[in-house]
Image 1 (tube, rainbow, N blue to C red):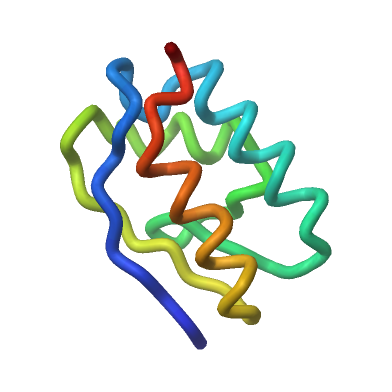
Image 2 (image 1 turned 60 degrees about the vertical axis):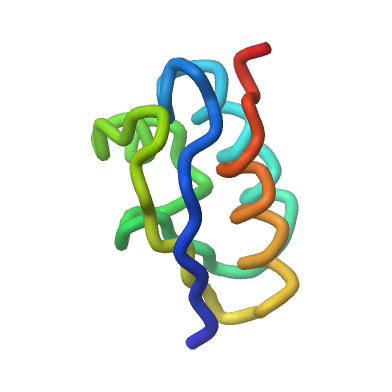
Amino acid sequence: MPSKSVVVGSAVGLHARPAALIAEKAAELGSEVTINGVDASSSLMIMTLGAGNGDTVEVAGDDQAAVDTIAALVEQDLDA
C-alpha cells in the first residue's frame, strides 16, 4: 500500500475548511485513501485527528496517484 509522510500546511491544521476540501477531493478519487488511518473522504474523521499546523501525518491508499493528490492538499494552506 503506497504511503507518504507529509507536514500539515494549513495554519489552522486539519480543521473544518481544510478537512472539508480534502474529504471532497478524496471522495472524487474513487480510491480508498487514509490519513493516519482514518478515512480521508470523511471531514469529521479528519478533524478527529487533531492534526495542527506543522504536524506530520501519514497519507496512505490503494493508488499512488490518489495518495499523492491528497498528500499535496494536506501540505497546502487550505484555509487561506
